[in-house]
Length: 221
Image 1 (cartoon, rainbow, N blue to C red):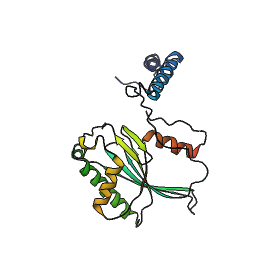
Image 2 (image 1 turned 90 degrees about the vertical axis):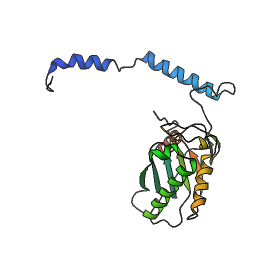
Image 3 (image 1 turned 45 degrees about the horizontal axis):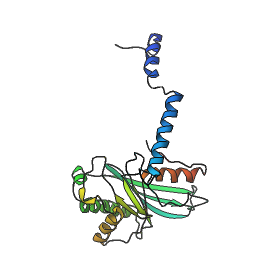
């Protein structure tokens, strides 16, 4: 059956379907209440391990304030594709910020291989990026790692478990920043300071707070 855009007989049916997706104020308040409950459970010493909202510490002490200057590398790992980025702040060009990035696909076999194989591949891609951008001395790197991990320091993150199709048991319980550093050392082609690890939610908060100082919450759905 085909219907033209001007066929008014479809409107009641469209409205009926759309009504199924409408959320009432009562439902929104219920979601808020349950989210707050889980956040409080995540903050409690007695219940945080069972909470669906883990409330893990980030070790980030403040949000961006004022102008930022300098160049930084970023590694964004959160699925079957990951990105390597070069971000420049406060350059002499017309825009205050300048960013270039390249995306790389992780072969399926590496998603279920060993930690050494995965991180060696990631470092190979970083080397390609540095070569393509003609970077001889790489600036500090920020590592966005979008998997469940327990942060024990600004540059330390213990993997709790894999998601999104990854199954590499020998990484679980280990510091993924250290695994990345060891892969860099194995190549012995460049020195790279891995300065910080964050998850994608914190990254969203930091980037939005840079644009709008009133931003206080980051959310990934």
